[in-house]
Length: 242
Image (cartoon, rainbow, N blue to C red):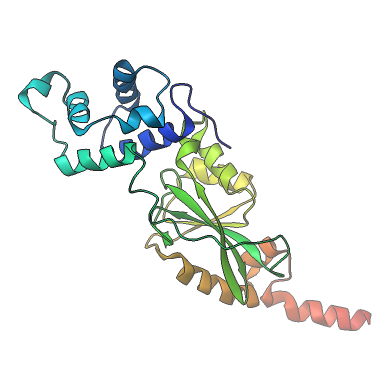
């Protein structure tokens, strides 16, 4: 689920959201208003690309701009925001996606990972930049999609919009998630699994693969197969019927 911002193009809204993440306690609405006052609406990628470091300093410094004050924002942060506004620097760590066709991997499940960098499990549900989508089978792991999550923050219900991004998955790995957000993820049919320490996504998925071979009850329910602990009883029942 996504929605274009009424004040900015979709890509411009994503760049503004990325920039806002770098500035603690930023009033995003006021920031967008200041940009719109200088560059008129709607804000576009071309307009943001023309925002200089000096303009950013003046907007953030407000009445103190004439004193060359950046209100505690370091120059390197201003330069990073400038790069983001130009569309540079944030996409370089996106991992490569492998082609995938439905039913290509028998006995597989679809798994989402909340991420901010590369193929790392290092994201909170409500603030991660992307969801990495994997198809996981007992003998193979394939990254099949990378779904940007920041556009969902433009939605009226951010948590529901983010949950919709992973609604085709059975499991969602993340470092943390709040109770109300977790309820919406579960309502979307996805099982959230918290990994507070994070780590390399594929290392986490290798451990999941081991469970796919002999699934515990919670995973068996997701896969739609008998749990390993119950399998001997099912086999005995089938043998008896035969």
